[in-house]
Length: 118
Image (cartoon, rainbow, N blue to C red; front, side, top):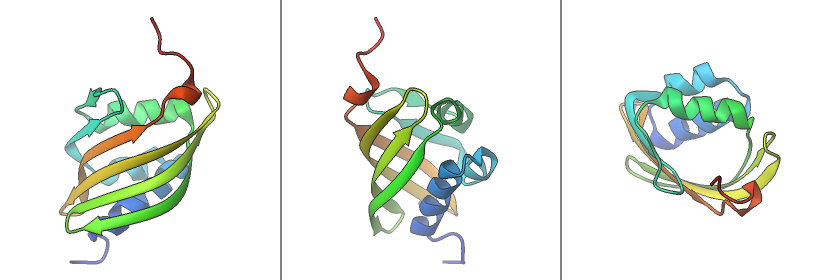
């Protein structure tokens, strides 16, 4: 693979961009039609929707473990959010093709965010 298209490198660059709140750099690493599934089966069909959520959360990341298997990358990490203030442990499964993230599925315990809205 060419430099910069290795799936693990792409995912770690994406997380670093989010950690630095550089959403333009993060967006460049995502495919136009990336499918993102969240903890409660919510789906984002456009990267801009997910990045809008990250902008409001102001996340900071602590990567703990990364597994790579071909185009698949799994990351275990801690995330601390500014708004609302919360600390969570997450796992995300990324699929990367041609240097772009095409799929993300994240799971986490939402308890630190408080009760779900009614």
